[in-house]
Image (tube, rainbow, N blue to C red; front, side, top):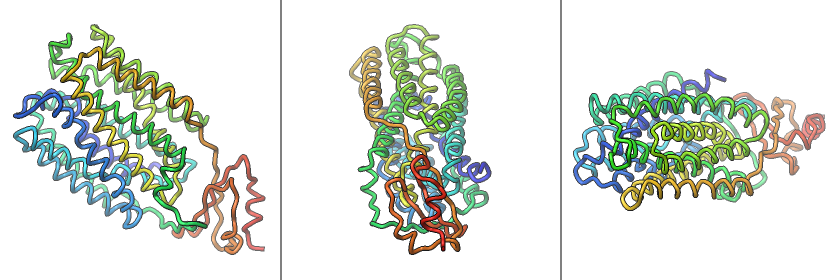
Length: 442
């Protein structure tokens, strides 16, 4: 399983490293560009997410039709072009165009769907945790390297490094990534992408994913500004920002493993999500009201622990709830909404810096998080446990299989590469032997 996940996780690592390298410093450096305002800087920080939101669904659906690899290649090429435009930007508006293009290469959902294609569902939580771990490591590396690289070589050099990382990702795609199995989907009624939004389980995960990502960009707008601008009371040097990000990311990485294990194996993702939301609320309230650097650093640690506890579980839950032929589209919709909230989070934080105080901003975002906590407590349910029955094609009576209907059978499909039929069913409600008896040849 690890060999299948490693190349794709590496591509995500490199792509997110390129995006994250600028996050800890972009807001303070962009303020020095011609035409910059706090509001436009907020748009710059989250701008890539707006085009991610627009193109996630088309990329996800396209990958379902033409294949994952060609779609990932197309996205990486767009990301490469956007990075080069950012590198040579001379004013805030050119930088904005480059950031929008970076986001237009919306391959996140496609890579996640490809991992779901390659890995069986019973080990998918582990696979998503590995993927999330790579993303978290890209965070950690970016938080440590971004401020140092920016202070030593300038923000433009970071964008050139991002372009190189895109090229390396393309090489990995065609030399290391395996081809997923060919799947044939058979259903008793036509499946529509709109069905994704009607599924309460998927809709709930879409909202959780969106809120998590929106708070992320809000944090990356306000953390460096609060710490480096004298009017907010801390007056750190830009090159010192790594001292808050590195311990926060180490704590986040440590928290990720237990959260994924408990959430998956004990089937308690709801409880993990609620704990994370409490930490989000505490983080923003502390950042808004403290005058102590130590307390502020603690607040940032709370934020990254909360983010990393959520990350692998969110993607895993979406891939579990979505039917096999909808994984690309479902993850595309989820990530599209999430990236839209990423844009809103950065823009909202930048606008608030223009018109309000640090205390009001912390209180507002903390209040939003508490409303989110209440919604999660009332609306979310932990998922049912499903098992997969795998039977060779030559043992199946397809007339019986086509007539197979049961409320506790989520779906079935044919893996044409491995020549097996896969039936996803609620193991607590149906017995495997009884299910086999309904479809095995007499």
